[in-house]
Image (cartoon, rainbow, N blue to C red; front, side, top):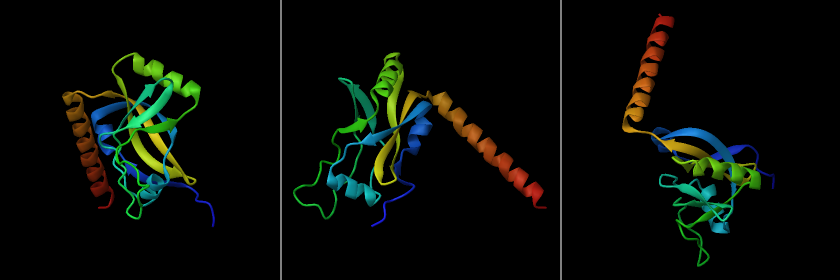
Length: 156
């Protein structure tokens, strides 16, 4: 059986880009059980309430929902358990210094398979205020209107 190649996105957290200013991103490995991997390969996961923290020099992701595998038996996993993230020690130290500075949080942006291995894109983010969210929506709407205007001018 040939090995998988390329990137296959399982779940993405689009709301995180709306609610947070993304400062930096990291690619992390995931420690999963067999039924979790099978459920992810079916494309089922939710990152909406997910977050990460550093405990005793190890990175842990919490509140990420991976539903039970339908053909699993008594070996099925808990849907919202803590999952360990795999990073180099230097990256963990770098992230912990940024988070300790205050105001920053660790947010998972997407879960994907890269060459057959489960990965998480983790972001160091700062929460947006309400007026920042409104400004972002206004900028996006202005860009859409400008694109529409340019498109209609070029095709006529």
